[in-house]
Amino acid sequence: MQTLQGTIGFELVGVCRAHRNRAAEALARIGLHPGQEMILLQLREKGGTTQGELAARCGVEAPTISKALARMASSGLVERHDDELDARASRIHLTAKGRALCAEVLKIWSNLERRSLGDMSAAERETLRSLLLRVKENLA
Image (cartoon, rainbow, N blue to C red):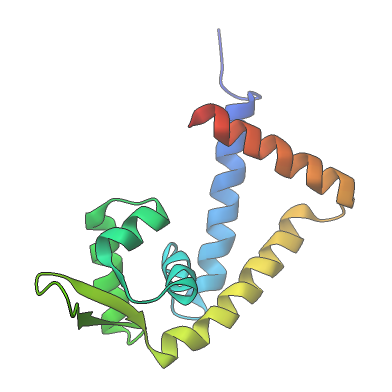
């Protein structure tokens, strides 16, 4: 009987699940849901973007980003402003509260990376990174 256990795909799913669970625990301590940290960091990098542009940059569908932004707006992390050139569009901006959380998010991800990689050497870390990028390219 064939089984999935022990396959690389099975292990990748397990690693992704464990990573997401640890991230969710840490993000919850600062009032964020998984995925919202990526939105914050994307807006930190380039604020004043439309919802559609933000969805594309985050690699999610429009309904997903819409729900997340509504939740984040009600938490005071982001705000919408009318687009000056297109009355049908609005631009998403970080609030001061949202901007302040970006530093916490970066700390969380740094700690998570340290925990995930443990005692791996710099060479092992680079090899892992390179292999993961190749897998990602193969799946694209």
